[in-house]
Amino acid sequence: MKDPSLRLVLISTPIGALGSGRGGGVELTLRSLAQGLVMRQHQLTLIAPRGSQRPVGCDAVELVEVDGVDQPSWQHASEAASVEIPRNAVLPRLLDAALQRADNADALLNFGYDWLPLWVTPHLQQPLFHLISMGAVTTVMGEAIEALGRWDQRRLAFHTARQAADFELPNPPCVVGNGFNLEAYRFQAATGGPLGWAGRIAPEKGLEDAALVAVALGERLLVWGLLEDETYAAAVEAAVPPGTIEWRGFLPTEHLQRDLGACRALINTPKWNEAYGNVVVEAMACGVPVIAYDRGGPGELIVPGENGLLVPPDDVSALADAVRRCGDIDRSDCRRWAERNASQQVFSRRVEAWISAGLAADGNITALK
Ligand code: UDP
Image (tube, rainbow, N blue to C red; front, side, top):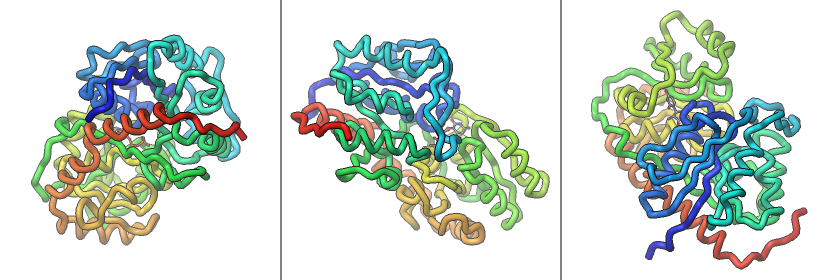
């Protein structure tokens, strides 16, 4: 039987308004989870930076927009970087707004990858949970997540086991995967399409390797995503013959899935321990096999021969060979994998189970070390 309805306060990422694209995969994760939780009759309040859009189908969700300066993303910080909170930062204000509503809630659920919400958790009466969206990108963030894990690991969930393996935790991690509104992704059966790549245009995404695969195969590469690092994009463009890359910009999901679904394969080239890899599953949902480096989340999501192929990290010629073999994969198997493993229904059930178990626990909590 389903647990009773939960009253949850969701705290969005502090690095940009929901809908801006600056939050990367977290934006889609949050939207999809909010929709899934609403379908499961939970009551939600969403605290998000000013300008955020309420997820479609979530009219009953209270959206609280908060003013303030965006946090810098930890993604591109150096290993030894310090915690930085700008003047008039939105991050503490998001927490403030969430805590003001906490007395009428069962739990708070934080989507922001930042130090302050982690640090403050043991000092709060109200139960604050964290869905961690990246690996240990800096020492200070790794340590903050590990310290919270030592205090009470039930407050932490991760997208994949590979992501969680970045952290030294006392217990096996709670892995909730991710989920998508699969109705928004149309299955396309045709096999003869172009090669595609999607993601933020930034060094950790390894676009240059996918471009080299296109060169090796004498084809063009269609690229979708937020242009985060213009210098990097120009360097990638200059490294391959003109016309190899067809820049398609950052599209809303409806258009992205239409164009992505027409591809023969999605090439995915993570250079970092990608926590999950939304675009990997979005492609599969359209029937597109994913050819990827065996690294991070994509290495865990791809079942070779069923929904894609994996090759050793950074081996461009193995990647090109695998792309040549992508026609062996049945596109309907890709879609079926997404339906079984990454629907928003499956995802929201896992998150509900994680939070319910954390709330039910009677508090065998050790002192913060
Ligand atoms: N995306 C999009 N439009 C585009 C390209 C990408 O909306 O044209 C979204 C995509 O749906 C995904 C996100 O950008 O949710 C990228 O997330 P991913 O987990 O792949 O990587 P991240 O940016 O979080 O590292």
